[in-house]
Length: 354
Ligand SMILES: Nc1nc2c(c(=O)[nH]1)N[C@H]1C(S)=C(S)[C@@H](COP(=O)(O)O)O[C@H]1N2
Ligand SMILES: [Mo]
Image (cartoon, rainbow, N blue to C red; front, side, top):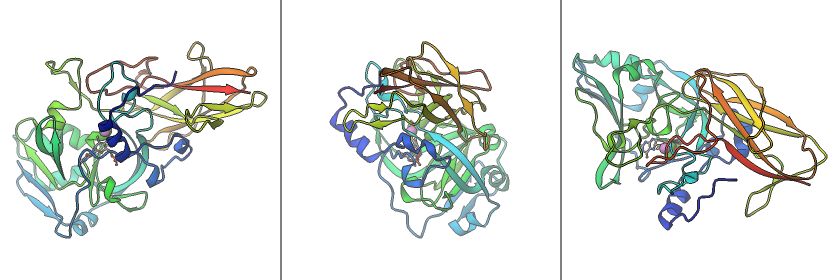
């Protein structure tokens, strides 16, 4: 059955009203229109003034300070990147995990324009004792009892080799304030939290970063006292645009029994290209391969489709499942963890044919 975010609290409703998902019918767009891209803001959208500068400092030979025009004057790249929140699917976790209660729609694909990070680090000249690069935004808040600036780190290797971009445009226009104006980090293939918005400093450090969003949060663990492992790249996932028409309140779908139904969706993984998408109309008992579209880039979702002919009037449960080039696929049921991360259990869409 559909994941039921049973008994979400007033606090979770407050978060859900601020942070919206991508309506699944928007899966028809290869590039998500800006207003339909999912949104997640931990604290407040900061006010950014004329005085904004990007600082690159810490364990570097030549600290830099750049205004937006200077960043825009650097060599630029434009790349479609599929981004998904690590907490997507959290609402289906049992027992309940209290946080932003995503069902399935915390995903989107933007066409990001910016300057590659690696040459900028080279220009600053990393010192030999640098082990990580810390990225900090302008937004501040309290979380887990810690007052903090939103910050995340990458190892030097990840920062240099994973194709990170300092992005100042989304879909051909300056970043909207909610998506990080004037500048954000985009690390293709990684879960959303990596992509620090309202970026103001890039600091090379000689000790692993112990900030809250790195060391406390975004770790896959079952118990508080465990160290767990860091959440990094996106797990494989296929989603379908639910076919037919929805009932207003339940959003349960209705299709015509006599006609073939074109079911369409997209699939992605941060670990390698998508090689297979399977479709089931009987809740995952039997599967068949979907037709795959073009893979438009290394870190953009891949379209898929199937023609489904309901066997007659009745109830069906449609499912889809992706497999990537590493052979990794999706589980039928969520794997519970404390933060409710990486839930890539297969999507289930109840449909009535009549
Ligand atoms: N500075 C800052 N960066 C941030 C966040 C934030 O709250 N503050 N949220 C992160 C999380 S958890 C996600 S999923 C993505 C969401 O990016 P989007 O809102 O542009 O879709 O931004 C990440 N970058
Ligand atoms: Mo997220």
